[in-house]
Length: 164
Image (cartoon, rainbow, N blue to C red; front, side):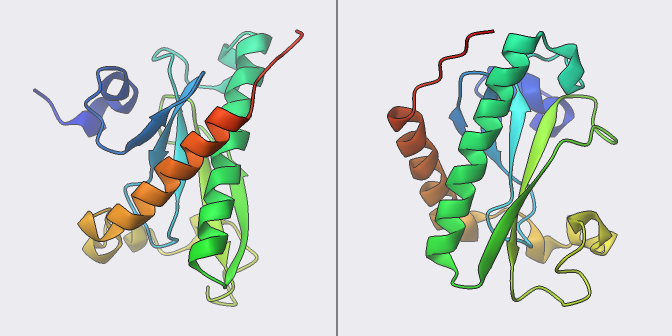
């Protein structure tokens, strides 16, 4: 079997992606492979052949964006509870590097470097992606558990109805 990272969406659909926090209506909520900003998460499409938001029919687009909103709200609540220096979340759908639809949910903190605090996360050193100290690990199990519980809480308390 190949590494789940080579097909993140397919491995999530097959139940083999270990970063999955929850399956939502139109996406998978996943915790990021790196955690230099604790709580970093993503919403992965459930449609493997979709690589940009505009590939989805409008009703599915709205549903996917509702999932992104749910995940962003869960990340915000968990990070606010876990760190008093929590500032906000940044939500980005870029599509520049990976050929599958996904939205990044980046928590931001007051303890970040002043030179980066108000700038895009992508201006952080590229080494942050490969530094073993930033890698998702068992040290993040409590964070993962809190995020999964918060996503479930939101999912169970919010109904999605769209008239499109």
